[in-house]
Image (cartoon, rainbow, N blue to C red):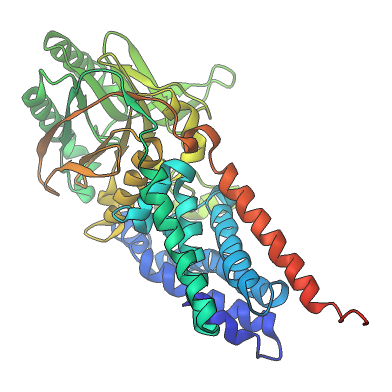
Amino acid sequence: MLFFALDEARADTRPARRGAWLGFAFGVGTFTVGTYWLQISIHGFGGAPLALALALMAALVALMAAYHALLGAFAARWLPAQGAARYLLGLPAAWTLLEWLRGFALSGFGWLSLGYSQTDSGLAGLAPLGGMHAISFALALMAGALVWALRGGWRTRVLAALVIALPWVLATTIGQREFTQATAAPVGVAVVQGAIPQDQKWLDGNRDTTLARYRALTVEALGTPIIVWPESAAPDLANNIIPYLRELAELAGRSHSALVIGLIRAEENTRTGALEYFNSVLGLDSEVAWYDKHHLVPFAEFFPVPQFVRGWLRVLDLPYSDFTPGAVSQPPLQVAGIKLAASVCYEDAYPSTQRAAVAASHALVNVTNDAWFGRSSARYQHLQIARMRALEAQRYLIRAANDGVTAVIGPRGELLVTAPERVPTVLRAQIIPRSGDTPFLRYGNLPILLLAAAALLAALVARRRELSPASPV
């Protein structure tokens, strides 16, 4: 729809401005509908005034819509006015490159990227080849081909149909290849879902009740090789519940179980003497190992604002203490004889930073707390992101959420089992350790970015020729 609308901008007296406004309107609609749940976390659970929550949400929507505005202005000013160079090269390439930029610029926000919509379609077969952005490029290419067909004659429509068919053929042939292989027998996993309401989780009076619930559910799961808790499952610093964790480790050890637990911990900086806080995953087996969340959430886990703004946040009774990011490169957690590539919450939306750990792993584990978003669509959007990570790596993924969606995902992104939402439960499944590199794990986004850059360059050359005066006969 956007590609079709951008054609109308060419007839305006100021086409770049018109294209920018069309793109911005498209982006505002997309992100307002797609991220409405932000006000639930900021106002409903974060305690910020509703006006502030709406203002922060509007700012994010406007920032994300600016990428589509840039696409609209660029298409009007620099791309050919019509033809294959516009619809099959320029527009799909520009969309893909801007979507990739949106995923890492200013900390990045890759939510609602186009490729995530295809976790249940045949196009998902492109994920291990070129990652989520390869699917986005394919979808943008097909959208461009549709507009090209509407603008052209019957020959154009035949060619457009062939272009639309090409990604599906590629995805269902090459994309179905097994790039990874099973390396061991199936391993049992038990995912503990405490289902503590978000507005009750951090109340001091509920601390012991929450710890008791997780202990009881863990005892129920003992004997399973791997037991996984969600993000910051215990409502206290790990430093303050060491006897509790030691008891759990002893129980698990006697039952030949390993624990993977989402915890917040504090550690003294040896240089400054100050305490640093980490959003972490603890692996408890014969050895103790930590994974510290690297990609923190702006304005939730760290606040990139001046000191006077922090003081204002204090007056508003908002949380403002920064977490410390973990190292960029961290090895997988080794538990129950296999290696798990860990990620925390929306960190799984940044696959490029995790490629090395995933390639060295046998399976993936993501601990999260999507209870921040209430009963909104956010948890299901986040689940799609997790499924895409399993697809790209062709590995099983264990997903532990505080109140849902807790799931075990197969190497084709399929949902093997899910837990009932908002119910305390232990979800049981088996995973098969796998090894080997998919093309995406080996090369990341580089191939699709080079392809998009080459297509964009070809479109720019075509535009230059379009503007050049006719050569004399």
